[in-house]
Figure (spheres, rainbow, N blue to C red):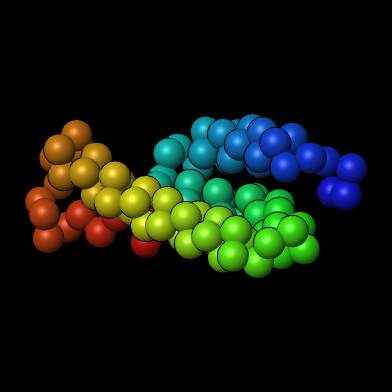
Length: 95
């Protein structure tokens, strides 16, 4: 993992997740968990490198990353309600 750049790690993680999702028949919960697991080591390494440069930038990156995950949760709820036709009470997002 030390030889991979951040972009290469993300692309590798995305490819692995695509294969995983195809094998799991597009279950949203599995997709979210696979994304988090696959990208976490690269994100942690990236944040640690950012801390050496500027800790405020690292904090901002972490905040944006967590907010992006939260927004993805809401997008999943929108898909469940409007595309899959689930009731609002039954659309729980990814988790």
